[in-house]
Length: 215
Image (cartoon, rainbow, N blue to C red; front, side, top):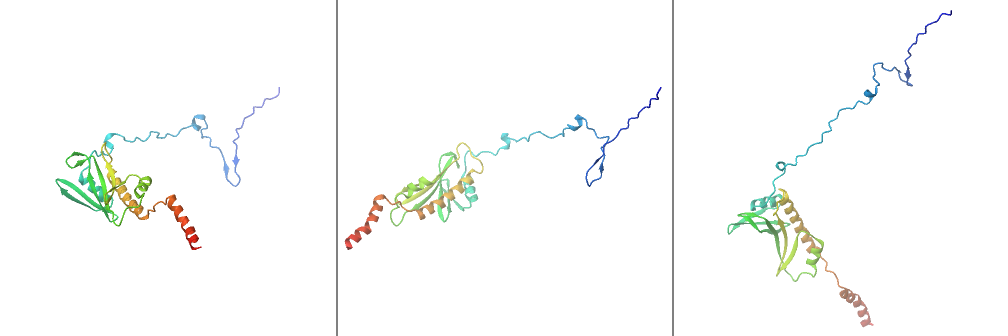
C-alpha cells in the first residue's frame, strides 16, 4: 500500500516591492473587515446657534432728542451749535462751508421728536435761476428736495423716526445729507440749460442770414 504523505500547507505572504523602495510586507494585525474600513470619524455636526432673541438685538429709537441729533451731526463730521429758543433747542451746523439747520417735526414728548427736517436755505442773487435747474435736480436725484421761496432756494431732507429706527440710523442719515448738499452745489455750478429747438434753429439760421445780407 503506497505510503500516504501528508502535505503540509505552507502559508505564503505576498511581497510587494515598489521600484526604488524597500519591501512592503502586509501587517498581519491590520484589520481589513468591512466594519473597520467603513469606520466613521465622529464629527460635531451641531449647527451654530444664532441668538435672535429680543435681548440680543439693539434697542430701537422710537423718538430722538436734540442731544442725539447733535451727536449724529458731530459723528457725520460737522460742528454743531445748539441755541435754546422758547424752551426748544435749535441746532445749527454747516457742511461744505454752507450752513444748515434742524427743523423739528412732530413731538412725542418734551425734547423728543418723531421726525425732523434738515434745511439749507440759499439766497438767490444776481438774477433769476436758469430755467429747468430745479426740475433737472429732481429727475436725477433722490432723498433731498429743492423748493424756491421768493429770493430763497431751500434744499431739504426729511428724517423719520416714527415706528423705530436702529442706533446708527441718525448718523447714516446725516452723512447722506452732507453728500446731498455737496452734490446740489455741484449741480448749481455745472448746470447747463437745455437749448430749445426754436433757439437752436434760430442760432443755425443766423450765419446764413448774415451772409445773405452781406451779399
